[in-house]
Image (cartoon, rainbow, N blue to C red; front, side, top):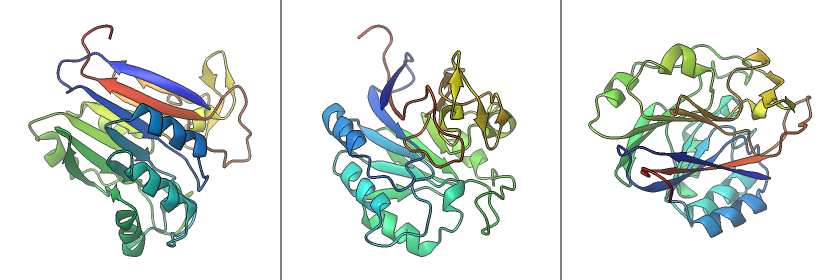
Length: 237
């Protein structure tokens, strides 16, 4: 596993360490939990695809959430693999100590954290109509730092680039599965040689390469990726 460290040198943000997890797909992630325990982030965010199936009290996904919640507040926005999620799943996430943000926001540690739910028709993880973005107008009006968890990085270009949102956290692309010369090969939503697969873009969009394999294309030159973002710094620490 790789730990990607990103510093956002901006006076606008308070001094925080934010962990970004994505695409866990029901894996136990013991190495991730060990790093989080050591690093002690102020906030843990989960950018979708925590699980591939409806939750039950013994789900591995909930075990991971419980252990994360012992470390820091956890905010989670669903991905395309959670197309089946309903109220029962939301309650189970809450009981595990996480906050599931479906087109809504909360305040934590002096910043606003929102979650843009993946557009879906409730039938298939592969069917993705446009997301519901009307609520973002109210999110933009908030007088403070705004962080949006959005599973799909390709939403950035069409729905988010021109909005007054300070930081967008994504996953989904799995780093492009195979990486050559710093570029990912394929993403199911962006096709071949996708634009947004891993790292920081425009100092606003941060994409995790994901923490599991769950596709017919194997990972190559593309380790699992835990992202740690430090904000509020104006120079070298």
